[in-house]
Length: 79
Image 1 (cartoon, one colour):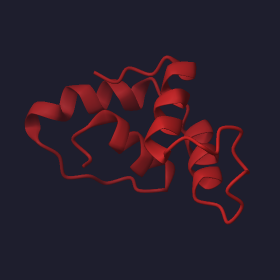
Image 2 (spheres, rainbow, N blue to C red):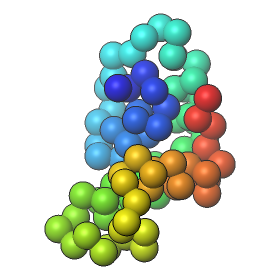
Image 3 (spheres, one colour):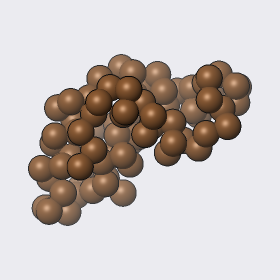
Image 4 (tube, helix red, strand yellow):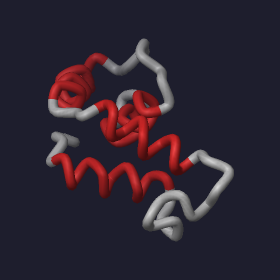
């Protein structure tokens, strides 16, 4: 899971900091992490996982869709 940038971004958002990833994915993950505003990702994940399903403005979106939306807002490199 951590070898895919969007999933790695979500894992970072829930507080994980050490990953075991496929060597072919290292560059993509490094690029994503370097372009990331971790505080925004943590806020997004907190909202996604909160007890209040409407805490996030787009509650109808899946967690993956919310993280992808955040990545697009931040113009985070996902490839």
